[in-house]
Length: 192
Image (tube, rainbow, N blue to C red; front, side, top):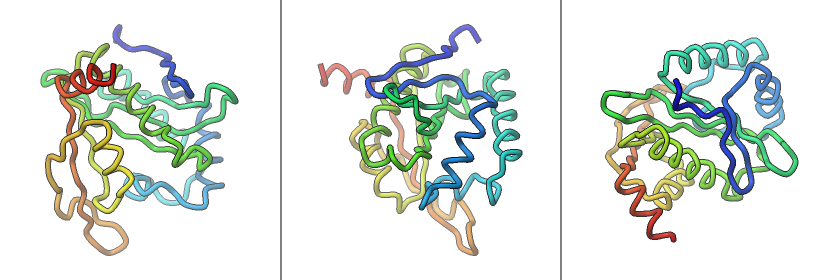
């Protein structure tokens, strides 16, 4: 895909396309975290191992080659510490939309505004470089931090996805938020 950038630079972090070698950083964060990010409960395959992380990255790279998604590994600019991953997933090129997914795996970087900065950079890339018209996110309804982040970034709540995932013996509701290119441009112009 000629629109694909290998590297994106933010104020406090940099992002590059995910590589197999990132599996050890991912595994280290998962094994040392006091709390695993809630979104991983829904998409992970149990206890993390290096083989599972390498397998996930390999399948991600295949989907990137097929232009179905773009996944970036995130690192701090100053210390080059691994922070997590962010991706534009389920890319629908015909209808110009994609789902954004973010995971701050390194606990040291949670609660300091990194998610906002990472998503801002991802939105700029999705709307301005890839030409997407809409980016959406869905997450566990009770994840109040993500509600606040989505609101601050100008997303509109599209609706509640009732009983979307089954985890630990019970059905859980998710919520979907959407941001259009027009809404993104309006927010960016208002910030200048």
